[in-house]
Length: 313
Image (tube, rainbow, N blue to C red; front, side, top):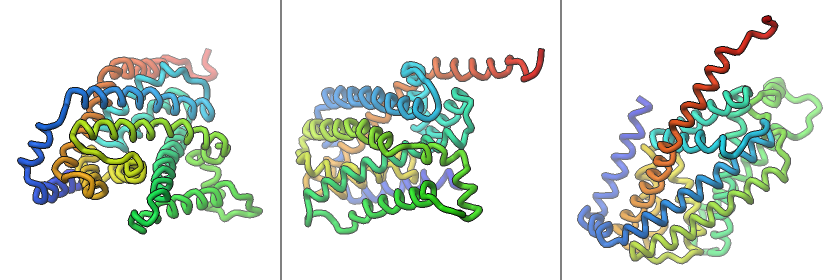
């Protein structure tokens, strides 16, 4: 039943959207766009995202799990993009499983490292959104300030629970601190966390620039500061694992936050085109690297199967 709800919710969101926006206006907006330069721009951004995203993951893994060549992670990272087309959590799980086999590390430990990376991704988006909201003070809904407050509470709670010195922590907390799931968080130094945030910043800033340029190809003009303020929130809403391939929620967020800057049909056409193009470009990268990732995974399994038992002669 849990597999059906994302499909149902996706359909419901699009039904609501198209009850509000006539379908013929949506088609006209797509027909009026300059799609060739748009596709080229989005494909270029997908390559940039893939290259830097993989570099950041390699850096994190080297710090906490051991040496890893950049080129060796490219197939696995690209393949997880392909899996994520079906389900984002499944994609993260596939990555964790691959790294578990690669490093012979406990699966919980690898999962904890990926969880730290996800938390840093959310932190980066909220920080940029907060900076944009501060610049547009008085022009943004007050409720949006709950996001940085909630993020601060999450980081404070984690720091207190997992890293604050306690003479005699409760048994459950002591067990949690000893868990492999939080090993990376406990070992991470503030400088390392800040380094990952700094490395991730160019991805978001490039996204703002690319969307700023791509929007003009749909004859939509949104100031960069407005994109800086609300685009992180659009990304956060789109990342919610409640619809199929994040469709529907992303389009609704574009219309909600930028509806005063462009016609809703134009925003729907742009958001759907940009979302699908980025996803399909990442999926194409996954298909390109899938044979190599598959071969490497099963080579690892074959090596495990033929390795002699400890103590055998």
